[in-house]
Image 1 (cartoon, rainbow, N blue to C red):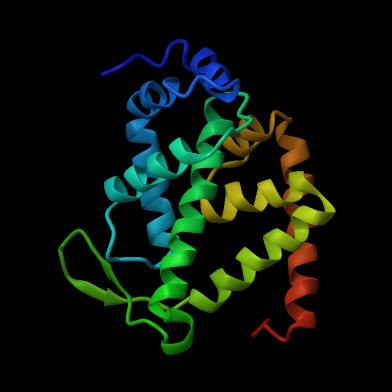
Image 2: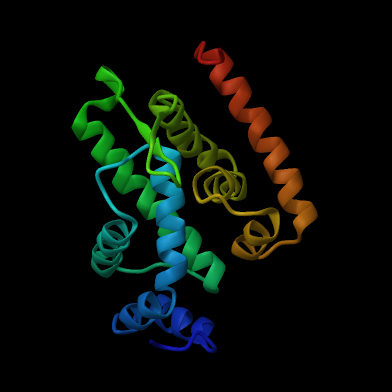
Length: 190
């Protein structure tokens, strides 16, 4: 297993076009990527894909992209989380989950199945809201991606954005307010 000691150097090399670095980065961050993937799967209610499969899909997607501009470990993980979100959203669209609704269940430690709320519509609205928000303020959009979809803490979000925690709190507050207004205009708020 590769060491993550100099991961930032590898990420920067990959960002500068050294495609061979991606394999090293994914190997070094595999456990963290799986954790982010599981968070995405849980948030998006997608039960027919494992965290490992999602990480592999993201690897393939990133290997085809011409460049990413990551400045460190957290930023790379945020980019990967965003790619995971797009992959799952595409699968939900293809499955027609938004039209039919899905019968999701949460698995507990006792292996019993508990029904969970179908939040597919909310996820689509937040996904679309992020894209609109990105046109207004990129940092606000990334904050929502990190906190809502990747499940990052304020500190992890701050690292991904390369800002302080106070800025993340401010971005998160503004983002939630903007999304609430956007949702209200679309009569989404329940």
